[in-house]
Length: 395
Image 1 (cartoon, helix red, strand yellow):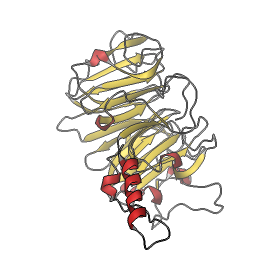
Image 2 (cartoon, helix red, strand yellow):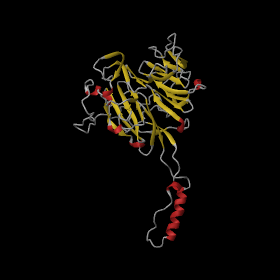
Image 3 (cartoon, helix red, strand yellow):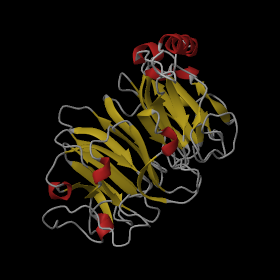
Image 4 (tube, rainbow, N blue to C red):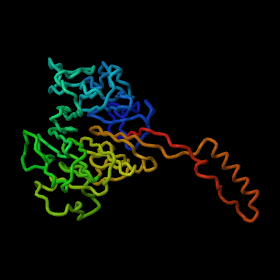
């Protein structure tokens, strides 16, 4: 759901979508490993390492060898034989990590974000970044820059993320380092700019280790070892999820003792109780998705309907996507202004269930002479239902 001006929702048209819509299966839904998006394009990686893409392609960011927009998820055939581990989508470019640790890039190279020699303006076919000779374990794409973390023995980085003008890296010791622009407090520092990586002290996360981190354009989200989810940075569109317009005097969850983190308040990581134990989180430019207990939540910027509540009003606190309440969320992914989710369908009646129910009702009516009205069917639940399938919802 959300912005769809370039077909980035894979629905075959270019109209914005304000409620979840089911995609036609382009691969086995149960085999989807990762979902992500960029400025106007989307990417899906399967368990088998296949890459499917759609959306804006004017700079070749889909890696299909041409520059025409694509309205349906299409396999990136140039990568066949190179199983994909992770994909990071920037504003108009794509960074691809293979299972053997090799990194490729395609799309716009106006700022050198593709990391390839000779500085071509764009690449429509994924090019190997030869300068990355060590095995890479994580990649990230910001607005106009890219990052890669190598798995060297003396390197502890396990994950990197990028915003519009900032970067962050998570170590295997649970420490989070940030650098770049701090215009909106996204670095949890008093400095306006950090030219070198600086660790966000553990007391900002209630002295817990960080286990995962995600980044929007100007805000960050992190999860700690006990499952707490913290947000900080820009809050103009509700992307921090800390307040509700209907709750005057609402205060963020208390953190215990005062934290000597920077001010203003938005610069201080603050935990959101409703996201405790989230199994999935994804950040768009200024909106977010999360899965908690199988329920898909959304909050933040909603101008194009990417929060899935059938409106364009910003969402100031995480709320369940009502249209998906009957489905169990498995994976989520955000583009700049669009959202994608992989959900498990609820169990449906088997093809013979209705006939069986009718037969059972007839038996009940005939044999239940003691009652003036026939009782309901007593058929067991396993006989009435079948296993639900998987579907990909565009939010």
